[in-house]
Amino acid sequence: MSSNVKAWPKPTGKPHEAPKRIVRPCDYGLSSAVYSLEQQLGTIEAYNRLVEAAAALRARIDAGEAKAQNSMFAVSVKGD
Image (tube, rainbow, N blue to C red):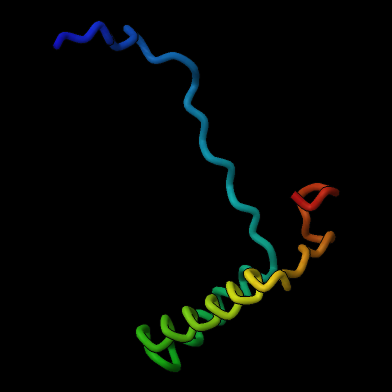
């Protein structure tokens, strides 16, 4: 089988960078908590505790008990 697909002679368009994530105060608190967990419990146990916490959050989301984002930290008025 032969193919008629040929590459463009030059790149089209301009590559776009992904937008930077907005860093909020809670992000610093989370990274500090992770650092403290790892320092006090070790990397493996810190990971285990984070997995447990994530599973608890997932269970709340699946049960329909998710909390809305605080409008003070929302990027838009709609809460996007």
